[in-house]
Length: 619
Image (cartoon, rainbow, N blue to C red; front, side, top):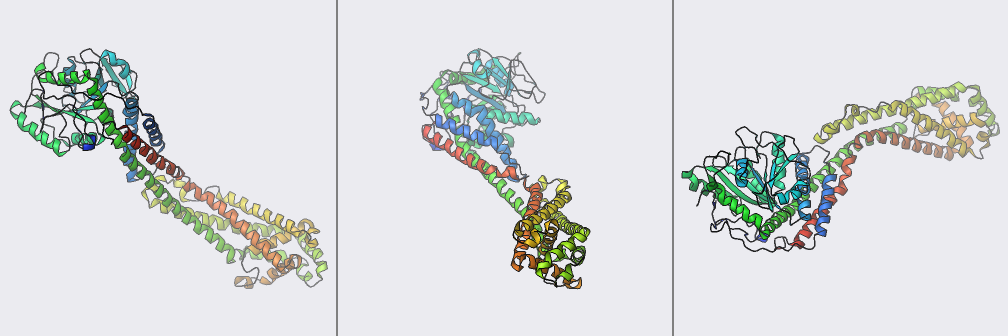
């Protein structure tokens, strides 16, 4: 093992580590163990893959799919999906799309690490100028600082990489600021970005640090002898490894007498976490000069290492290809996981909708039963019907000739118009009461069913526990419209029935009321139960009038059509009530196509990645 900026590890570490998967092996470009000339350059193929169109198209489609999904239902899988989706979107915007458009662009090295690890001091020391604020107060780095050669300012300053950050030439506390500093002390072709602490107490800083690390071509991770085993850094190191990012490590502030032991232990941890190929630089505890910089004896070898990397296009391109390939390879499993989360949303939405549909199916069945069992014929409706058919000469006219039937019916109806109005009001009241009751019960049942599910409970609004405020008015209008529909049906079907057609409005009104009454029972006025006790004779008399005018089968047909029409209107009313719930899940059902788009676009990206063979292996 060696110290003072030397690279150490279980084997000779290289500046461009080989991935753990043999399918992603790449040649080392700079060997930092060579101290003869600051690193020896090994040739690499600089040829840019010629077929990038399919990959770019796939990435654009994937970006669109990620932007379309929303995971509106509060599910455990949605929390993670939102986080992963946001991270993937940021990486596409910040790194993959701009990097793919310019594979020859300068290399971005993001310097990241734990609080107080000395990242800013290291960056300042590497460029030999106090460009990034360092100090004992935390968090020190409030906005990221990017240091680049003046020749590369155009690339980093115009927002190709990290387009969501506003460029500035001065230090800033703005949450979306990126300070860009040009200095000739860093070679062209490479930039150092001093990122916020990965474990910062400021939530925005932690998120920004993760975003910047995802945009790195090479991540230079800085830790200390006291904190190298902390959990948070290792979680991010594992994420970077899985993403395929090229990683190098700096072990800072190591007591000189503990270099061998600490470096060896860290090397074992790296190997155990499949990071054994990552270069490891060890910096001993040492004082700072008057400008707050590390002595050249500590960082000189690392400065030379970066200078060689910046000066060799082959080296940079190999780093870019490995990181780019790894990031692309990680997209497919991530997108599959997001699509699974979308499927979970769709399944849950369907389950919630089914609970609502079950409640309103019950409401429709209760309504249908109410028309079938004769309950609506009882009470005031039956009394008003008896009053209507029992006035005038109607009953006595049943003993006369059919030829005189029209005059008897007209006389009865025209003589007592109030009784017909009372009957219509009574029927309307019964129907409205029934509809209000079933709608209220259905709303309460649907509300309770959603309340029992966490995702449904999050969607509920207090007014959903009851039927719509305007339901009584809509029910009144429904019944009145239905009654008018029945009268029009009678008028139309009368046709050549002169007894009604020539009897004008009163005859039509009387026949229509009788059809409505018939709808209230499946027995078609065969007296049963309370109907007998209440005086079904007059009801039978009314039916006989109708049968005499229309015929037995005709009246049954008219009643069946009227009943079907009423049920259709009631079903529409209840459907509108149910929609108050299901409209809250409509947005989820739109996700079906987006789930498919996620999978298809991710597969397209993976196929294009394999064809491009960025690491020379084809996968």
